Length: 610
Image (cartoon, rainbow, N blue to C red; front, side, top):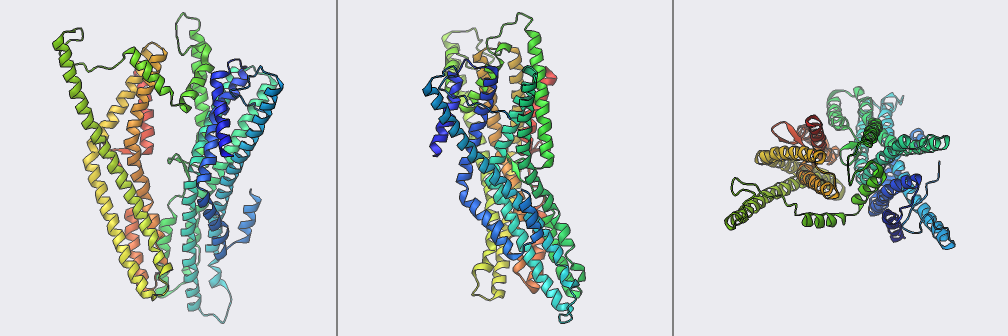
């Protein structure tokens, strides 16, 4: 059945080339759906790929964690929580075709579209259910820790205070294990829903911008107003259901340390009190780290980001409205433009969508590039550009050979930087798996004495801490080696983007020039992204190491070994929680956020120069 969805989306996209006699409403519908449906199809593909992880995650959330402790009130809360028709424009039949065959094909297309949207709705519903389960599991965890205080409050004359303390410590360890498992579920949810969150953000930003442009361009009748408002509200509501439930996870996870603190530890006395306080410090240090789901690896899915995205959409629509007003103003002047003429605004938008989804336009660019002979030559002091003598041409050939040899070295250096950064980030990931695997020592070696397993665990933990120290040493060495490369790359990127933007404003607006500038800008951004995003992976993976340490099974140790292990973990986790980031110029962070900042800075520099 999946192959029919691919054919369906492809038939929609081909309408860009075959359907030319559309109304403005139909063009707007095609513009939205041709952009949104391929991304929605990715949702289905991605969750199909992760179906095993989804199954394991649901079993963990709904069965395994609930076996240990389940607050019925929280479960009840979780259970309770819980326009105009847009036509589909395809490559065939044409909108003017009213024959019986065309009508039958349209019915089949609509049925396929509804089945497709049913799958997408099921996927979005699944993501909402997962986030609701996670947020209420954190709430359930809070209730569990609060309930531990009842151990000491119970009026049971047959149980003395020392027995209550032992019962409290065992229950506290179970709570820490539940917290560790819930964090694992959160990581699995992030991995499963990452593509969905990223795609949802793109679709919502795009759809709302198009809707706001419709407000500016369409006739302001009652029907059009109701249609636009209902579409905007539906988009905001669907985005809100996803982002709000994900935001609940961050909110509820942040309350867990307070619940741990209120679990009744102050009732313990003597040596037991000291032991409990050390347990609580280790657990609360980890619990106080913010728990967030992210889109694109950098955008936090939360209440705050929902408001931020809405403001971004309003700002983009406002900027586009200003551009259209300027275009309307320049229509009164005899300025020729063969590509971005104001009368072809919709065609230009469709052309941009076509570029995004059809990489074959790069081949078109290559043909134009070769036919124009627009090769950027290497300008040297001699020979002059007008000199066409044999010696001048021979010198130019030598110059090009030297230039290509130089660029080969530069490419080799950049490749080495990328390979090294990938190796370091995967070493941090490998380190995480090592610490997670330590918990298996207590679960698999059940035939050994507990003291022998503890000794083996302590030795393995020391090996892991040494590995972590060595990995951080590698990171520092990499920073020293690559500082100049990162600094130079940022300088080149900002300068190149500013110059390309100035060239875009100053050059003749033809198809050849537009494609040349766009391809060059894309190449610069990709080259920089390959370096900066891989370096950003180091920061992301290094930040996950303390979580792996926390989940290594330390709560299974007892007595003097437990105290020894907690001291080791506190020191190691405090070091692991320090921000690991590569820098250029000694101050500019090389990360996902800085990559976006560089692009914004380039545009700001262009605005200042222009």
